[in-house]
Amino acid sequence: MASVSNSSRLNKTVRQQYMSLPQGEKCQVTYIWIDGTGEGLRNKTRTLDSEPKSIEDIPEWNFDGSSTYQAEGSNSDMYLVPVCMFRDPFTLDPNKLVLCEVLKYNRIPAETNHRAHCKKVMDQVKDHCLWFGLEQEYTLLGVDGHPFSWPSKGYPAPQGPYYCAVGADNAYGRDIVECHYKACLYAGVKIFGTNAEVMPSQWEFQVGTCEGIEMGDHLWVARFLLHRVCEDFGVVATLDPKPMKGNWNGTGCHANVSTKQMREEGGLQYIEQAIKKLSEKHAEHIKVYDPHGGQDNIRRLTGHHETSSIEKFSYGVASRGTSIRIPRQVGQEKKGYFEDRRPAANCDPYCVTAAIASTCLLE
Image (cartoon, rainbow, N blue to C red; front, top):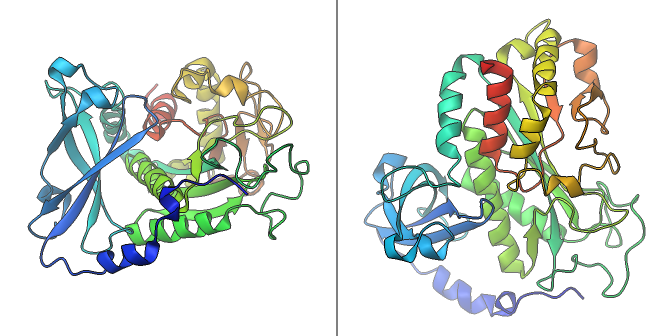
């Protein structure tokens, strides 16, 4: 049996007694932000006198940045600036989740606030109607760090029966996947779908279609919801790009991209132009496709397990061993989108989408 947290074993019937109490006109708002690691999410909650109707109704707040790897103790207050509001699937209506940007004491974006730069880029390219869909892979672990439902000593059967699988012997942790899906739909996150992935205990959800800055906003909130749902079940979701060494697939965050021109008749020429520009900036993109400048992706982009080599740019129709894949249908219809397969599972979607937009449309 996988090692689950003690918190998940608390009496949920008792919890429900309190959760069902009326709260009058008051509203709980949970502020969510990215911490100084560039990967971790933090949150805290406050009471508002009434339900906010828009993001403008939610006040700025602050937090202790010295406890989130974001400030020195002597000057630790950081600003939380609300940017995107969602319904709260844990405490239910009228309560809200609000994604925030983090600003330092001098109102300059914090080092891991990549949204500010991304917003500027997306404003510059807005006439292109740039659409994204990101495929977020992740792996479920017990709190002991061992993959969920793997034998405590040894390994499950080799890869083959697990992708899009059904059955207790092949699909591990579906309850989490389905609860996360419903939480996203309730919250208003643009979740597109989900499936079991190639490695056992590895899953994927897709977010999109989103335009511009909306892509990063919705994926970060979808990640927050995933971590919260996993917390309730007492397991951990890791976005490590290569959680298990050896003959097991890594975890990525493939980016599907299209502009208005690419989606119209004859759009393939614009897709090919974009791919040519991406080929000339391969090294620069690798540096922003994981939070550690490519050091995480080195373990994943090996040229094996449905990946391209980190050293070499490549593209092809219907190929999953290339940097960029042109879907077969796109090749046939001569219009549509392309898929950048290089981003790691733990990438910052603001960095990925801003880099793609800059390279393809501004250079």
